[in-house]
Length: 356
Image (cartoon, rainbow, N blue to C red; front, side):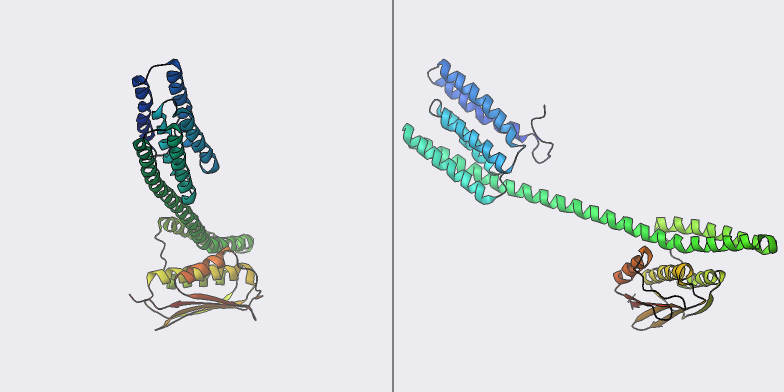
């Protein structure tokens, strides 16, 4: 049977505080020994131990009931054995576990009133009432302080766990976007070339074999890109990505016109632009039904602009995983993404200049 919760903040200290119970049998030893005195002393201790360990498992209203029952033990047994007033001190110590400070202060105040009334009714010495009142106040207030500190640590711990959980979710989403951006374009190109090779297999076997070799080469590149992405080192240059995009568009039968100004773009921005270009070209190949596509990169002191325009169907459909991921990457760098669908689709990505 587990007496205490698995909480490192609690530890073994509760067992130490039970030492105060020794006052009850010691006082009984020095008083005139009667069976009633000893029976009530040990019966009270047994009842208290049940309530004592129960108090570490409950909170709120249930804890208030446990505190009240411990106080009842003190009220009932103090007239028989004055050392039983120690139960009031234990009750005050558990008041510190109450989450509401006003409730804890009310419990401590009620215990002070009870000990004052019992001392007056039993005609106990004044020093006895003052000593009990002092212990109740000091231990109650100290435990209230440490209880608030304990709850603050628990709240901070829960907040840190939530932050870690959200960070894990964000990391999974980032990995999913990266893999989508890396594989979506490449797999589309593999499908196109495979279909072309299948059509040319009978009429032009040599060209079909060439397309198959391209499929093999692209597949190997895709494998290398996935490995690089997983390792966090995927960094194909924007110029290389533009050439790869032009090849993919031409393989899909789309006429390409691309103008990329040579510029020294920071690695973080270049990576985002390369990913965005890949996703945009993949969408053109898959969905636009375009016959021509222009790719332009313009760099100026205030930043750079990447434009992808096609003459396809140009529908403003809801953003999918790829486009929404692209937008998040762009906005994370302080840029913006604009999409227009008139006489085709026009995608413009603007990133601000970054000082090196």
